[in-house]
Amino acid sequence: MDLVRALFRVLFRALGLQWLLGALLLCSPLASLAQSPQPIPALSARVMDLTGTLGADQTHTLEARLQAFEQAKGTQIVVLMVPTTAPEDITDYTQRVGDLWKIGRKEVGDGLLLIIAKNDRTLRVATAKTLEGAIPDLAARQVIDRSITPRFREGDYFGGIDAGLTALMALVTGEKLPEPQRSEPGTDWTGALVVFFFAVPILARIASALLGRKGGSLLTGIGMGLLAWLISASVLLAVAVGLIAAVYGLASTVLNWQRHSGSGRGNGGPGGWGGGWSSGSNGGFRSGGGGDFGGGGASGRW
Image (tube, rainbow, N blue to C red; front, top):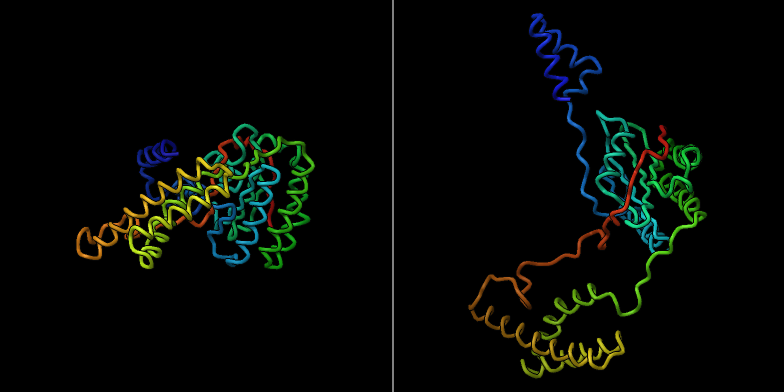
């Protein structure tokens, strides 16, 4: 694009028609050459509304549906709502989104995108390679024409998205895909570590206020050990967790005491919470890394 623009400038400057070049760039399709493509947002959730059209409860409802479907079927579906895709058409923009986000399971490639450009009044359903059989172009077009755009014309964006997802999920459900990997009880160690490192200081602080630092740390260790035993049914693991929790709880209460007495003031650390922590608004959602979007799908207008 930069090369084309440079060539036009050289040509019109040589002819002494710089003013005509400016007019053409402003008043003709050549104006798109002077525009940068819309940036693609970072993938942070299954439903991303950059227009503020959907309410928080509506977004949560759609997000919950897509999360449950992914857990049951394995297929990742993401809805992106943007004001415009100009200067690109929605097909090219969607392709860039699919190439960047790579949604869908890496070993399967079963990602599905629903992208809506509200101000352009255009939308597109795009499928990764594996889903092109489940949702051929004609089926994607029918979902758009029958389920989505009639509601969009009435201003019911939530209803259109919800109905479109229902139809798309039905098509995916009819396709024979590999079963999603199931996590066995007690194997979610990421969640367990989060609970451990952020809950233990709080429990230890409360317990130490009642029983003193040593007694509170002992009670914290016993409590975390019992919790580990209930989750894993392993006595050895429960003892190890209990001992670590007791030591960690004691250390956190000592640090907290030093902080309040003036030593180490202003530092965030165990028990201090000076820096704060957030799990993020997306509930840990991330791309499966397997989306190969080869152009399958359909576009529509309302």
